[in-house]
Image (cartoon, rainbow, N blue to C red; front, side, top):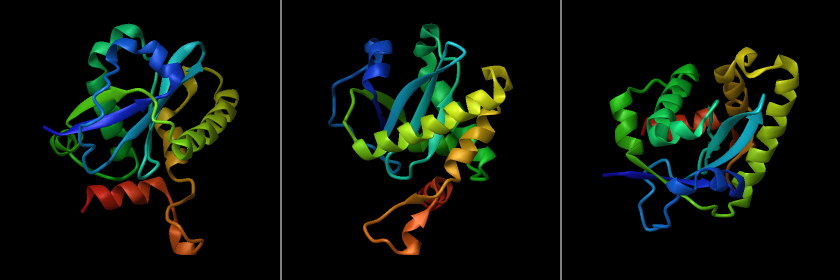
Amino acid sequence: MRRTKIHTSKKLEKLVKKLITTDQNTDSGILGKWNATVFYVDRKKCWLITNGLTKYNVILTDIKSSDLIKIEQIFKDALLSQLIYDGIITNFENLNSIIGRIDFLPTNNDRSTTGFQNHNLESLDWWKREFGNLENMPIKDLTNRLNTSSIHIGKGRKMSDYTNPIEEIKKILTE
């Protein structure tokens, strides 16, 4: 069975201690590893989960400690609905086979993805002021805004090295 690694930030790791495993030897599948961090809107915990390869973002809102037992399903549902919103149509069975089971791991100190997430959290802070409370925030639209921002993938500085997360994850999922 496939497994997907989600490395948590130190802040999130403290909140989900019982989910953290230390088995680093699992295969990451075609999407590779993900990184997750926590942020707050109206004192409600929200998670920003970013794919390491494509920089594709998914936001989980209002996560309570009672939700942790079903966090795997919450993540898969949020990922599927974001993929559909972003125009990357896939069915749940296909996505479920790609993701498999989820392993939450301690931080991997991926400075590139962490920096990318911090930049996205700054954008989310700006939008928090614009929309006010969590109920007024169009989360899928805001995540789509993050996923359509220009990113650099590759070593060179050619224009072809610039893309966006939606195009990158689309390449992987449609191969």
